Length: 488
Ligand code: URP
Ligand code: ZN
Ligand code: ZN
Ligand code: ZN
Image (tube, rainbow, N blue to C red; front, side, top):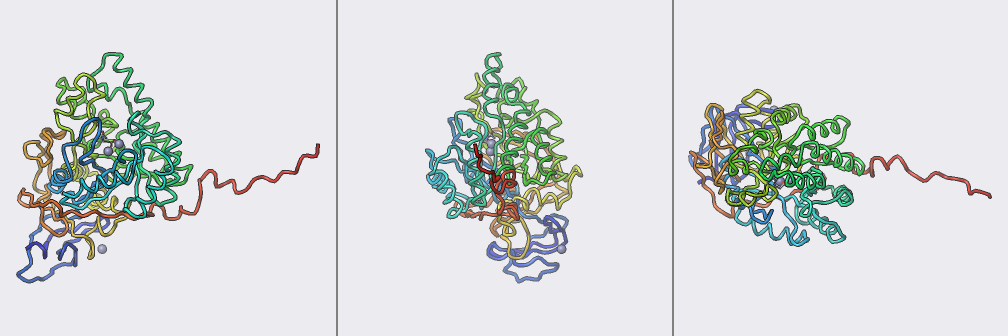
């Protein structure tokens, strides 16, 4: 049975410390982390000598069974999570989209979708309109449903996009609830203009996607969201940071002491825009996501920002559309469903690009693939650590083995992979989720219904010390200036 496990002799890595130790697990919980733990014969022993024993990855940004752009992603909560587990990710946070304007109905729909889960998951919620009902429902989501983050789309005009007035309302509400505001930062009005212009010029292919929504319009929206969050004095999380322009705005704000979190995604760190110019539509269309994958140079700059701490954690934005779905946009890039894969590849890519290359340490790797996500979404140290009492979500990585990515053997339902053919050093050989060995010898052992919904409480460390003040700029005006009544 898998209910008692001993992982022997590996290098146990947490975000700030590593040591050679054994890890003892019982009924899904880590009970001890010590050198030379002795156990009876009933315990399953895994030899991890020469390997790293680390907290399972937490992907802060996924879209499973997502209805978007007139279709639905091919990966649902079972296939997407199977892929995740095969790649060393043991928890993800998915975005609930309101249903017909109702947050409650949206939540219930996602609860149903997630019933087939084989690993733990949490939810963010998207806010796409504003009225008293939305405001009240946000409160219910935080106080009763375990959601502590809300995403505002500054792009996708005519669909999910919100304006600055709504964003301000949302930021104020988030602040009052201790919930984290997240933004998709692109100037949606400018993008809409850019798209029309490309079509007018006869640029209907995937390259039109990149040309119509340049990095400068990502930088603009990132700066605007940062200023508005500063005005309201609430923390901000910028999802899928794809450009130097956006990253530099985050760097500047953080330097001034503002609480801004920046999340690059695997595609932004590992790929560049040239794919969108590929003469074969089917290949080029795979790479269409928003904000777009940028020109060569942005990838390296985002890696450097991650290594310097300007950006804090890595997501994927896993949003899987197959080649038939991508072909909806064969005559018009605006109809290509936006999204790329990554839930299975993130842990290997970050190891290869960041650790193997010498840009970060192994402890940093744990921090930006797992621990920092757990801290930001307030579930640390239950998740994101190998401590006594933590959930037994554990991976074993062999630094001397290698990985290869191909659609022929990946676990997503996609017929393609944006990382096709990519190889690198470092292979996740074992994944343990909720105390069960779910990935070993290149085989998955999973069952639907074994994953749990993880409630995320409000008021993470990002709110420490800022909850009492009102809007930062408004705070300096404490009372009206007293003026004498004019006599004539
Ligand atoms: O292209 C993308 N990113 N698709 C998923 C939706 C989003 O904006 O995160
Ligand atoms: Zn220590
Ligand atoms: Zn987005
Ligand atoms: Zn996304």
